[in-house]
Image: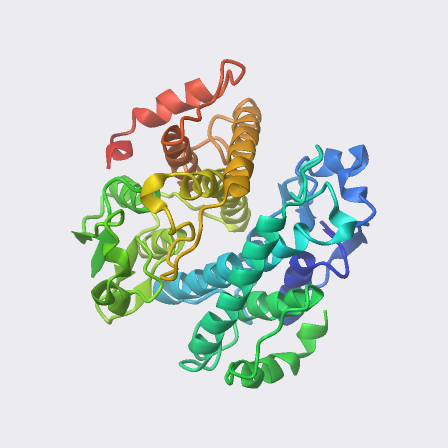
Length: 210
Length: 210
């Protein structure tokens, strides 16, 4: 089993953090994403979508969506639990994870991919043909990221963690999103009075350093 | 338990179809999305995100991501199975479902929301403030939808169904995506020789009419 990884990127970090919370160690290989190693024939032979992270099981099965990789490990080792123990928990945690991902992470990614020079002509992840960076997409991404900070702060005024009263995969996604947002100089503001409490608690988890 | 629904929209259909495959019947209420009923105070009190579908459990828990709603019912009633039976299956099916959703459904949605007159100034789902439709986003959505047809057809040349050798939630997402794409006059082309076989097989399922 091998995990194709990249130390700085947000999606691989979500998986490494998840594995660290579970106390699971697996073989990893670093792929140079900014340098375009993910779009070389060698890597595309492993994963035709050119995305990172990618998990390759011992039988050759390829899984390349961060959340799906996490689900594999959650099913293999349900504790410490990160994705829910019963039907309602699993649905609620999945729902919050998706909300954070769709409202937050993808908004940051849209702003980042459409403005950062290193991804000029590579605005769409995993597409080998040139895709132009578009200013209106970057602006919309910024708008939606700011909206996400409001949504997150409102939620953390109701609950201790994103999905409820305990730490779950939804907190990993949210924390990684906030770090990623700093790459485009966006952060919660003074009006976001709940996020700092949560951010500090999550930062204190050893696995957050994975 | 109540499902807030809208007959024509793609995301509610994914849930209705899933429930029909499971043989599960629950109370539903129709919400007029084009007419903006989802953004009224009454509906926002039920779901502050203003999105459809929304499942409200008997204890008042609100779940509003289609896939999360499906997960709830999968966990409550694992058979007929739609999201996997073991760790590998669950991860692989989840991965293909996400790929179809992210590469396909969201691309169509981006093109649709940024070009269809009924959503003028409502380009971003669930946002009450006006959001302008942006031509570059619509164009990118069309580009990525066409790319998705290529990806889907290639996959269906390798496997009987999207996630492997049996029908799963990933096929529901893909089929609904193709129907949704017709709303913006996009369809697979003659070069896509595998999609028709699959489309016919999936169309024949009674639950596809849900």
